[in-house]
Length: 412
Length: 146
Image 1 (cartoon, helix red, strand yellow):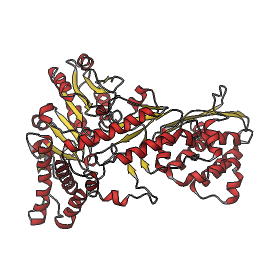
Image 2 (cartoon, rainbow over the protein chains, first blue to last red; image 1 turned 90 degrees about the vertical axis):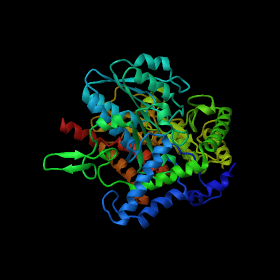
Image 3 (spheres, rainbow over the protein chains, first blue to last red; image 1 turned 120 degrees about the vertical axis):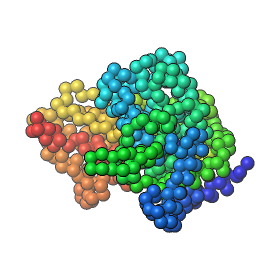
Image 4 (cartoon, rainbow over the protein chains, first blue to last red; image 1 turned 30 degrees about the vertical axis):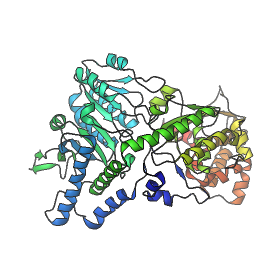
């Protein structure tokens, strides 16, 4: 078993992120974005320092190198999520752009008046607003899967919500607030039985759960590089080839064509049809390095540590009076995410106290306002862990939240 | 880790025991302020007697600074003429931005207790937020527009 303190040395930020006082800053906002190991930062830098030319354009060596790095990253992603073909891997900026691509291209083409789009109440805004747009523009109906108190969904209820009118089921793999993993494979089966496609937001699951798009049999799967140790500004849309093939382009312009005449154009083959303009080759190189890093560490090790850290935090929080943790009472159902409230104290003030103690968490609505409304709260505080967090950081977090009420002027 | 009070006594007191946090039913002016990044949602209500702010209150949810600043502000503007209230708000926003003179800060009386918390952007946003809502010029502008 690798020593976590040795692995942490691979992350330059943990060395640089000293609070200026005794303790280094504890980064517990991993659900917002992860930290990046040096190999990822180097891969991105190396593209610009050694292989910089516009990929997929020139035939001189530099451009060929940039193209190879970019296309190798695509192959690496294909393998990482077990897709059939590299043609099914579209590079985007992030999960939001990936889902918007599906909404604008597939949604506006294949959803009509009177049809239905089904989403869950726990969606991040990035997997809700695109479907609000599609249903508003087409006259279709937007319907919601509610969740149980522990954050789980009831498959029987989902089954009852899907019918012949349902064209799209859009659901998150793991909620960014409650951390519960949805049974995507089973939901995909229910959607397919009625002829609907399933779009899965994998932003929050990919860093923690081994993804197999074939095994889950999902039609679309979107995720971001930056949440899985990769760079910001590179994301992925997986789509089944036969579906992507019949979809119109999302953005048009450079690079996505075979030939152009004055009034018409022949679009490029997959996946280039969906990658208009100069691509983010450095980002792709960084994402490739992140995948290699994750393969080296292994999901098994990461999951074991994340569960241990989550359990340590959850067990500690349950013992502190006036703290409510949302979602399941079992650490294994949180995927490293603990969203909580402290009686009387506004979540922003909780965050401020933690900052003073050198701990970074997120306060607010976490871009999931409908879920918070459903839970009956305006805002919450969220601590989210990655395998590289330490037991010592969890203990500091627990020590700090135990003092919040008193320091804000309330009793203990 | 110290167990001292996180904010100063004035701010803590106004947050926990606000004097003006209640629903003013016969308000003439109702202003809503939402700060989505904080999850703040505060409603400011004022009752006017001609040009003078006769009474005021606020309701809603927000961080300690937003709650305390709303409460302190109401204590200051009630009984004042509209123009004088606007001047106070302008001076307060100036203080939060770090542009106010010592004299100006002094004129803010109790609200000057919020001076130290203006050091970070989120803090500054929260503090100036309740004050911005007291900016009657918005209301005047919308009246003219309609």
